[in-house]
Amino acid sequence: MSELAQEPISAETTPAPDEGRPQKSRRDPSVRVDLVQTPADLEAFIRLPYRLYAGDPCFVPPLYMERRDFLDPKKNPFFDHAEVALFLARQGGKVVGRIAALVDRNYNAFHDTKVGWFGMYEAEDDDEIAEALFAEATAWVRSRGMLRILGPANFSSNHEWGLLVDGFDSPPVVMMPYNPRYYVRHLEEVLGLKKAKDLWAFWMPANVDPPEKVVRIAERVRAKEGIVVRPLDMGDFPNEVARIKEIYNSAWEKNWGFVPVTDKEFDHIARSMKTLAVPDLLLVAEVKGEPVAFSMTIPDLNQALAKVGGRLTTFGLPIGLLKLLWYSRKINRGRLITLGVKEPYRKRGIDAILYLDTLRAARKLGYVGGEISWTLEDNLLVNRSIEMMGGKRYKTYRIYEAEV
Image (tube, rainbow, N blue to C red; front, top):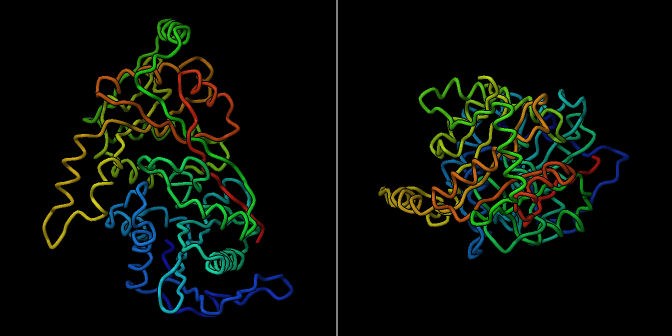
């Protein structure tokens, strides 16, 4: 298992820039970037966004304890197959930026490539800070034999992915990233990164009926093919997770940027999301008793988290927890986070059946609507299906790339 670097910086862990390779100049020598090595460094790394986004009405502070667990190699199984380095930028002793650099061995083996990633980027609006952080991230992945760097990724397509480039007028839904507008300028103009792929998010209002023709065809397919859609059986949770895992890795294996989820990772994600689960929104489609598709919609916990401020306790009192429980009762929107169909059963209308059944369940719960996210910009079949059902694209996230 690889871990966050905990040893003092050495020539081995922080190599000198390659001779003969053009390097970005750091015009402001007061910007210093260091590897996160101590608990105090990690604390500063986690806390930075809370200060940078203070006063931003669209920022939803993540739970501090969740961020600590996410960055803990002993608790996050992503570290089993990846090497991660965290960096902090300081100016005059003040923390002014951060970035993560990583190499996912599973991704590179699956795609037969040499790609490193950057993520968890946060910085004050200063070109020098952006340049200094990215220089460290690229040098780190280059020293590990990588040829390109992509991102932002926190830490893979199975987690938060992409930079928000359009749709800044509303808060993000649960498990989707958010950032200031000026980050787009940082990555595109200051750093010169190029677009690799756009990811789309759609808003689906619950009070809009899908076209009658779509409903008619979907119900005809349901009857003809003998498709049975059922909610997830929470009493058989471990076996249900195994069934969904098989569909997941089969349904997405040809998607751009996909990396298979290990058993340990999938179980970890499933356990963490179990507390959010509403069985009627977790649907499994079966043909002759065989699970062939599933869709997962979760309540938008961000509606409640926005009221908490990132902490569940204050002065030893569970004030944040009580707020979270109270406002969780008022959630009225969801996020359709994934919908997958096994290869042999695609283009039969099963996806439309799952959309319809999810919409009906959401209406019963009193939801006003929900987000469908994310989809690849060039996944024409899926995007057209969403639009046909009444979804409207309202946010765009971008993955960037550069040679190192």
